[in-house]
Image 1 (cartoon, rainbow, N blue to C red):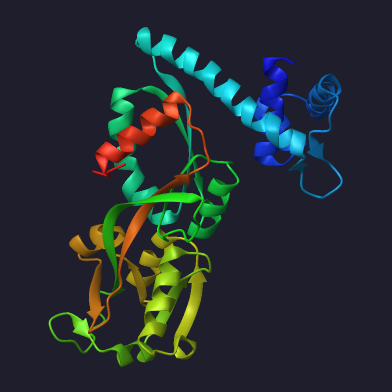
Image 2 (tube, rainbow, N blue to C red):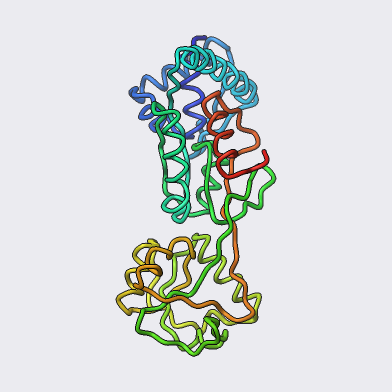
Length: 301
């Protein structure tokens, strides 16, 4: 048993795919398969089930996987400690982000972190909140920033910042209001541009309206859009209105490109969350990242 075999084994389980493991490790798929076969031959035990569409661990595989993670992380720690001693911390941090944190929250932290650790690289994947949580659970990425609080005991989550959704409208659209607050029924009269399913923003809109006995089926929805930036432009051009994160609309509001309203007696307040798997064993760089993000956002970890 050697280090490379363990690295290949962990990568195959991480991606549940021989081909994806091969791409990650810059190997051919036959080489990856050979490493797993040689490992099984040496241990005289089947480690992975190959009969199903998805790759799963046998009981022997589960035992080896825990040891492999421990061994690999200790090797990484040795490398990290030496590089830290020599003043050069480097590596890769994988992050899954939903659209609002990716665009309006994470960059400021990255700038601060990169100032102190310029040799650390980031791999940022754009997912909606639910898919980001799934990727965290499958350990394909280590950390996530999402707009939906996970309802899963295997996920650790911390509040990052507070936010609220506001109704943005074209600058020339005047709604009947009182000090910026409109009545709930006014929404039936408007053309809406909505985020697509899976979006934390969309989920908050639908759930909040339902809690206030408002029939979302009666809304006139012109379009479903994935991009928050596209929504702001569509509203600016007069195609309709939309509920968006206030922090994402500040630039348009301050430059007088859009107006915004709140709904009387209806709260669209929410938080954004930093998440990771409770069962994940972090290497030293990942622990450094976790500590830094907790300090940056004043999280009591």
